[in-house]
Amino acid sequence: MRRGFLLLGVVVAAAFAAPARADTVDVNLDQAKVMRLPERVATIIIGNPLIADASLQSGGIIVITGKGYGSTNLLALDRQGRVVMDKTIQVSGPSRQDVVVVYKGIDRETYSCAPECAPRITLGDTPAYFGAVLGQTGTRNGSAGTAPAAK
Image (cartoon, rainbow, N blue to C red; front, side, top):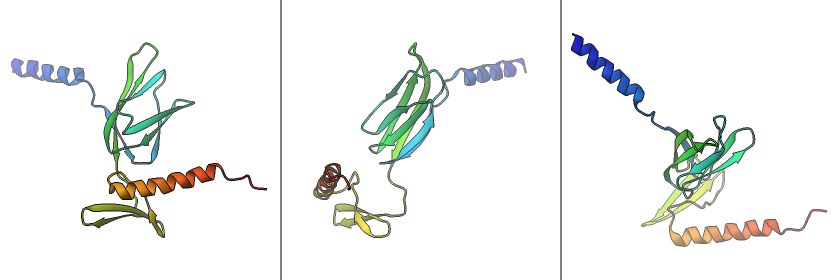
């Protein structure tokens, strides 16, 4: 009986001594999520900036943007370099109902249909389609930046 209590005590102590599993933050590709940071954060670190990006805002707010599929981590450090937060960031595909994927043999194209369908830039699409849509989008966005001011 005494041995059982000793074993139970060791198990309970080990459970409290084990580090807590990092919480997971789920973000969709090309979308942002707002989080509040713990107090005293001086530095934020993203493990893989190809998967997610983070922007520190005033008031202890951080904006996390999904940039590529997969998972990475977010570390927040205080001024002494101690970790005050460690979270896993999981970036997954779009969950909206307006996304339509078209397969032409092994080639894939993605469209956003809300309510009419238009090409969408999505990781994993056929390179020729992806490049064409990216080029058109870049041209359009560049033109918008140089448009004359409204009178």
